[in-house]
Structures are given as C-alpha cells and as structure tokens.
Image (cartoon, rainbow, N blue to C red; front, top):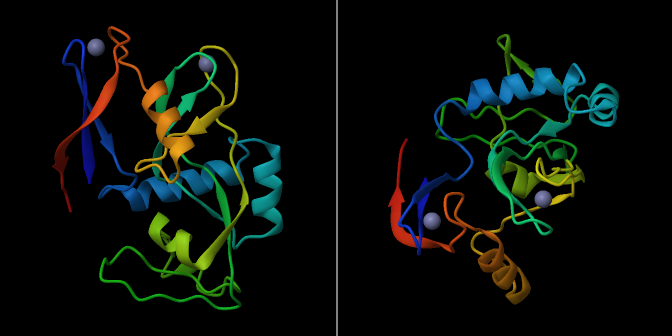
Length: 180
Ligand SMILES: [Zn+2]
Ligand SMILES: [Zn+2]
C-alpha cells in the first residue's frame, strides 16, 4: 500500500510505499546476507552471528532529521528476536514462511524464511534499533510515524516533512495505491 503526499506550495507529489512490496522476499534475503557480511556495522554483524534467529527488518520506512529537516525513505534494519520458544504462523501469502525460534526451520527447502514486518510486530521483540544518520548534517534521524501515535509525534511529523523541490509543507492526500 502506498500513500500519496502533495506539496501545498508547488503541487509536487510524493509516493510513500508502506514497507513491503512483492519483491520483499528477495530484499529480505539480500538484507540478511549484507548484515551477516557486516555491511550494516560490526555490532549487527556480531549480533546476527551470535544469535542466528535474529530477524533484520528489511521494510522501507520514512526517516527525518530533526536538525535540518532532510528526510529519506530507508530500510528499517532494526533487529528483532522471537519472543516465545517456538513461534510459527501460517499465512496466506506463500513467501511468508516463519521459522521456529530454535532456528530448525530457518532453511526451508534451501530458502531463507521470510518474516514480514507485521509478524515482527506481534511475535518478536526489538533488540537493536539501527541508527539512521542524516546524509546532510550527520545527526541522527527519527522515524516518521504515520499515523502518529501521540500529539508530539503529530506535531513533529507535520513540521518536519518538507518538499524537496521548494521547501513547502507536504501533506497526505486521501489517495492510496494498493498492490498485491
Ligand atoms: Zn513543493
Ligand atoms: Zn540533517
């Protein structure tokens, strides 16, 4: 699903994909390989080597800089561990094969079990938040939460997402795109 945002000033349209598309299984697999190889830093590499049950969230999210207002759509890369001893979910989407917590079904007929973000929300706990750094000023970015959970988030969200062309305010239109 995607939301369409529009600049109030110049009319520029922005499409924000909400995390997961039909290519998610291959993205998920690539992210996992990159994490194991140390592309996301030594800390995540060590974590995933030590605990192979760790799931790296490969879904896209919007991050914004509270210092300079720069924002970008980036992979979450937050790391999760299963909460229970065994966590198994059957799902109607064929690629969402869930591994058990002991890792025994991690390899499913030679494929990595793909765990989508909505499963992470339920059966997993976050153990490491990936630091997203602003490419413009070097400060740490925050996740843009939509819809915002509390009043403070709401005010920050509205304040911080600016049009990349003209600097005007971007607001959410009612339009949504559905795929899958
Ligand atoms: Zn604009
Ligand atoms: Zn910045």
